[in-house]
Image 1 (cartoon, chains in turn blue, brown):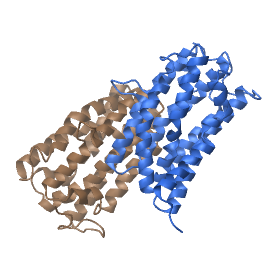
Image 2 (image 1 turned 90 degrees about the vertical axis):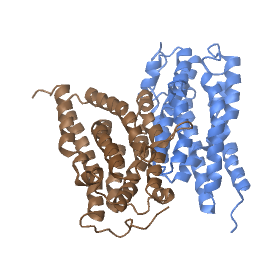
Image 3 (image 1 turned 45 degrees about the vertical axis):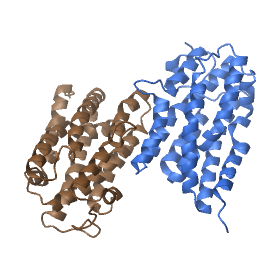
Image 4 (image 1 turned 135 degrees about the horizontal axis):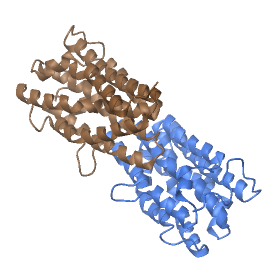
Length: 245
Length: 245
């Protein structure tokens, strides 16, 4: 059986985004169209913080398994983008600015109290995946960034149009990701195309990317169920009125 | 039972260095006094490379478990010091310069072929320790850096005095470590003193530091046995003549 060419393999990866990326989730349609209440936006910001906060840990877990200093060096900027440097604010701090902008206490959000258990399970599964799976699967799982620019552009436009809290300052996280993500994903995609040279490896990479779309989707399912329909907040989950600034 | 004061606890940690740090190992006496043959220096450089190469992986493993962005940021410079940045050469590259300076092929050294199995076991145990043990133990295990400046100064003086290959260029690794290590260890020691506030925690930190001295000592035992006395190189270990530039 012939091995699909890199361009066909890349098309296969991109189809996973078309079919499974969380831009298709009804919660995002609600958010971007101005249909969310302020409390629903708050619930999203609180839960999504948990994902943001674990991304540098995921990237460090990846680097802890990489024997090649050049690959570690290339990957390190992801941690810098999220954690910041002496000169540059990082994404986590920008996310807390968004939290402040919608009336939440940033310390409450950073404490991760009130995060839905299902959010934790999904995100922790991702960190564990990157720690335990073959490097090819770990890199491929990061390729949801291929699909992120479109959703960030929709989000920036939708938030600015529909919500009073949205200003270039409060939503700076997204505009920065538009600048940061393309270099990461270009590197990651190139690496995966270079290293998935057998059909088994291509299947592994596709499975990893599919897994990652599930990690993202599951977070929105939990959010939607808790705060939209049926609105059944599980014990321990954030309740409107808590964690306000 | 009273909890020992921080100053007494620090003194306890420093005693571990006095009693167990690998500056006491006969291989170091041989190396620093000019008693090593060129092949014995080569064996040391090949094996010690494996330790150097795993240090950034160890530090990334640590960061992968840290939930506090500020602590991750403080720790990240260790990885930069070893892997380098766009502007600055890193320690691993400087170590390969030393390898080149003693006639070894840097690619051979970087391949880690010829590293003694006992070196791998000790170093891999350290990386695993930092990945698996409580954060306090992980930080405390880094405190052998408390004892490193003295050995680096001895080494720089001893190598320059006794060996033709030693120039400021070939041994730049050690002079840089003299500049880098103090900030790391000041941070690490402060963190351990702040976080080891019960007797059990102090015992855990002392045990972690003891473990780390064992990791360092075991590498020199293996080196000494293979290349000095009795000079019994195990299967797979580097043999003089291999890996030359």
